[in-house]
Image (cartoon, rainbow, N blue to C red):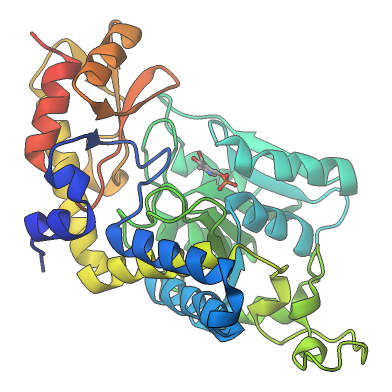
Length: 384
Ligand SMILES: Cc1ncc(COP(=O)(O)O)c(C=O)c1O
């Protein structure tokens, strides 16, 4: 259950194979594999001269995107809505789930704002109360989150799978089971986990999952998808109503036969027209994950993360912010050092792409990175 990383680099990430850059910033934005670049370039040409290809050529990216996303999540394509980012999926959850004034939504302190502001918006619009459970030792506190579910009028739990700042990964199966037992909706922002970690929405009993594909999934900006559990779809009213969400629009010669009746599947939540050529590229990139195998990708990224954790544990001059326990992290690693700005400068000088977030240097290796690359980055991070 592994793959040939050198061959993968040569074929899909030739700039990495040539040593032009050590790219460890997938938690910010992922570069495109060669196959996505090729698809995008071809689609751009075809877009410029539209008559050379049929509309089906572009629409195929949408269909394949739904199918590939479904396979990555262990869902069915009917449960996938194409979106343009994570926020769209989180807003879908906040506005489509049938909340009433006074209902309570639980989340964790330390969440990325994409999973906070849509719920604050719901507070203003509907009088739903967002309660943030404090972190413990600067990490999301799973026990406290579960305890908070027993507060009065709690209707939903919404969390990031993996924290953008600390890399702490939540046990979604545990949280999902706790929600299910209490009849509480479970909403997950998966963008910092999906790709480096394998997902099973059924095993985790997730009701709505939101993700952009622009980071770990190595896809263009403006691409993403949302999962909505099949049984929930008929109960939800889309917050934004798309013309292609109705079977009545399927016949392009008869648009004016209006019929306000949605598809019975997650197309109900799509709002078209979307960036079609970029969605084709997303389908190509998701195809790469499926080809390598999500479990093999997870194993590769986990071994890279282990390498960083072992290095951090061996040193007194750095502190790993990310949990040491393998089950509690994915590909995102945050490391505290004395002088963040100086460390960041050294990394830049060594041509290592990284981020500085919330008091840590954030390194986020993906499916094509190597331990040799990490060694160069770590030597730059703490040179003595
Ligand atoms: C946890 C999390 N959610 C969402 C986003 C981005 O949201 P969107 O895809 O809507 O731009 C980020 C990006 O930094 C993130 O870290």
